[in-house]
Image (tube, rainbow, N blue to C red):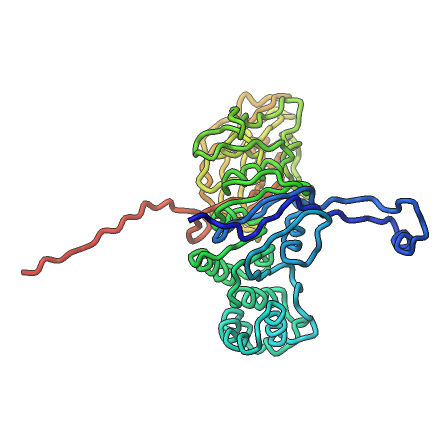
Length: 439
């Protein structure tokens, strides 16, 4: 049986007129000028794709790529400048906080308002009310105006409404990121149920782990244009290259083979030469805490993913490298180079240094430069981490900090399966049935 397209987007373009001042907009609206008083900004340009019934499709891209604009046009919140949209099914959408809600109404009144807007009768909403209230789990706040809600309470109610009105198509735009971890787990469990029921999900998210885990296919937008679409792994790989301002190379879908879509071998990005900065293609923290007496100095650093590309995003289970460039300004004895991972709350998770690894830097005379490479497997759980660097050692017999860079860059770990705690034990699990013999 042939799968049908439940959403079809054809040559979609959205152009905004940007005016330098409000009076220019007014003069043009009243026909008081023949001069062009605006400049055009294309949020979307000639974007075409389709979503099949029962698919879970993710849309990713850097900020300003047009992801939310696509969803708003599909849901009817915005009108396209050019192009056509075809939707075959009832849509339930969870867009930015506040969309579709009257802030003066209570939560309960907004349940009925949203249900009515979708086309349900009051009796049909009554039938679903218990399921909505149970999923939202906001207690007596359901009788309070939603303008008094926290963002977490708001998204709980919005998602509860969205998934309990029997939609054929569920559209979600980043809204789940404001919920707590338990509510997010509850929502993603509901995604699994929706997929099992053959319903269609269209989701925009910066959470690459969720995109990789739940989506059947991913659409990559960049600067308002459709750059590519395909498997989650291939599109996430291209997205990671965009994040560090590199020209993306499409990886062949077959695992372990690096080829571009035209069959040519995909070349990894090589490290710049000694005169270039590694950080030119790598996102760093502009507010890095830096201190030390500079007897030795960290002059550069970079993180390379399993393909040898500069990247702030690492796949869980992959082998990656951390490179640190050191310049010695004085005569030192065995300087120590270190890195440390912290979570975003500031708790140190793991790290190592050249002393622990029994690697010496010598001869350590002034003017010498060294590149220290740490190569390891990424076993941290999926999430956001901060990476710090240090160069320490002994000067005149006293322990001395030569140079430290705290929270120098962020690292996003993409995971298809998280376990408990900060890191994965990589357990090999077997199950064996025990049978008892009866005498």
